[in-house]
Amino acid sequence: MNSPVFTSLLPVILFIAIGFLVGRRGWIRAEAVKDLSNLVFMVLTPALLFRTMSTVRVENLDFGPVGIYFVAFGLVYAATLAVQGFSSLGAARALANTFSNSLMIGVPLVALVFGDAGLVTLFTLISVHSLMLLTAATVVFELAAAREHAGRSGGPQQALWRTVLQAVRNGILHPVLLPIIAGLLLAQTGLAVPPVLDKPLLLLGPMALLLVGVTLAWTRVGRQFRAALRIALVKCVAHPMVLAALGWALGWSGLPLAVMIVAASLPVGANVFLFAQRYGVAQEEVTASVAVSTALGLVTMPLVILAVTRWVV
Image 1 (cartoon, rainbow, N blue to C red):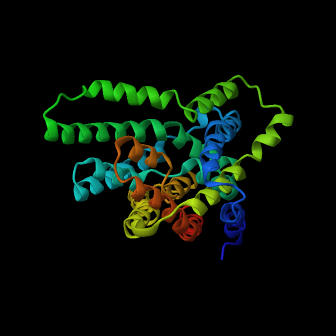
Image 2: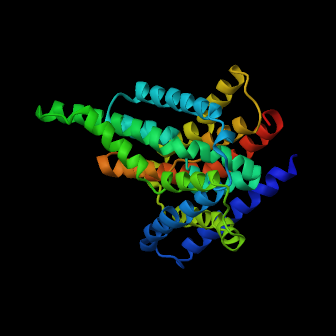
Image 3: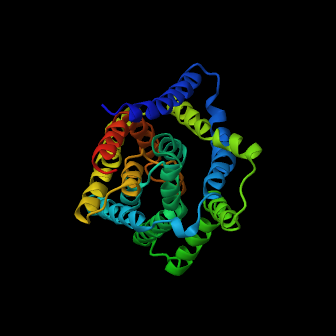
């Protein structure tokens, strides 16, 4: 047994469990979960992203494993659309099958298991993750929605170039990408974050894990369980297996590939629900899939990490 792996995972499970208990006991009301999510997404996570990227030199970034990640994403996404059909529902399920919770779970998990070197690799992915994946997803959603609308009413469709430009703009003006860019710019100047600020920033990751547990406590799966479980199995099992197979076929190994495989094994990201809500499709199913994949991930992520630390790193 690789005890350092489980020692690193124990705080992740513990913080999620504490958050779950707090939610179950009603110490944090369901109405407050959205406010907590905004706090994590708009303040805590950007601060942590800035802190880590402020120590990174651009010449040390490796985008090779990120390319493999996007190829794996494209394969799973396209396969889902082929099975589900080109529709808003198919687009929602395809995004759920491929979009990882790389911030609230991925950042603290990778930090605990792989340290700062792993975080640099993960943030290299995060720096283009939302922009590339959400832009592609937006185009697919818009095309599918326009096709469905045209089929119902015969009305005009929005020009594709407008859809793409809007998606790119939203991706750049984003609370994830901006602190990454700011941190990188600071790093290139040779300056550093003062220790009096650096240490508090380092403690922000566990706050996001508490929120994951609280969210799980207030999510009702009910009749959506079977559909959510199918998504969870693809996201937490099939997605990392596809990525690992690609890495093996191309002869890749080492820490960067290990981090990419772990990133692919993460549960469904909350941004998927925002898409489902915006386009009014599969909202209950996507919400349930976030909860079920997070619960499943507590079992599958340790296995994935154990595997990559033995055979990839």
